[in-house]
Structure formats: C-alpha cells, structure tokens
Length: 118
Image 1 (spheres, rainbow, N blue to C red):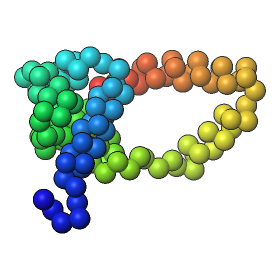
Image 2 (image 1 turned 90 degrees about the horizontal axis):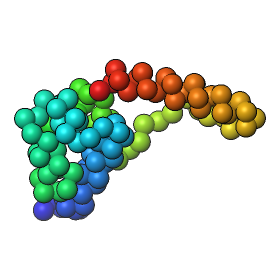
Image 3 (image 1 turned 90 degrees about the vertical axis):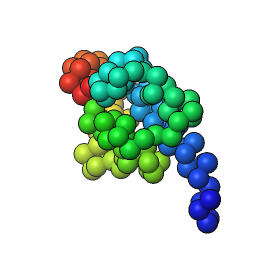
Image 4 (image 1 turned 180 degrees about the vertical axis):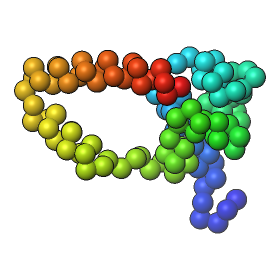
C-alpha cells in the first residue's frame, strides 16, 4: 500500500465517479459500451460493480465519448466559467414563467446535444 494513501478508497471513488458518468448519459450500459468500442458490456459492468479496476484503455475511450476524465480520476468537479455562473445567477433571479421557458429551451437543446455527444 502506498504510504499515506488508501488505494482501496481511491479505487472505490474512481468506480463511483465512472458509474456517475455512465448514468449521466442516460443510455443503457450496453449502448455506452458499444460507443466505447467494447466487445461486450460486461467489462463496463464489472468496472461499475467494482469487480475490476478501471483500465486505462477504457478511461481513454470514455474520454472520447465525452466523459469527464478529470472528474473520474480526481473527484474534482468542473469549475464554472464566469458565463456559466452568470447564467445561474440570472436563472435564480428569473420569474417562474421565465424559468419554465428557459428549462424548455435547455431540454430541447439537451436532446440534440446528447445525440451528438455520444
């Protein structure tokens, strides 16, 4: 074991965050595996269940389909840009009706983005 580092806890965190990224796609695991070029979805499931450590080749393939590899490895969520922070600020200040319109626009945009992302 590495001094001052709980390898088992690190592996568990990586597994949990990888699983979060798979779930974020809202696709079946079999489809995520197919898009990653995996011959079978079982290898992805084994990583998600902690039966296998996340292999470097799978991590690299995950990056190619839009997974946040930095988050998976470090647990550090992405930082908001000024524009993103401003959007949140304005959203929170918006009326209920304006929020509904924004959410509908983002939902429509998300469908087309998700189709291109993965």
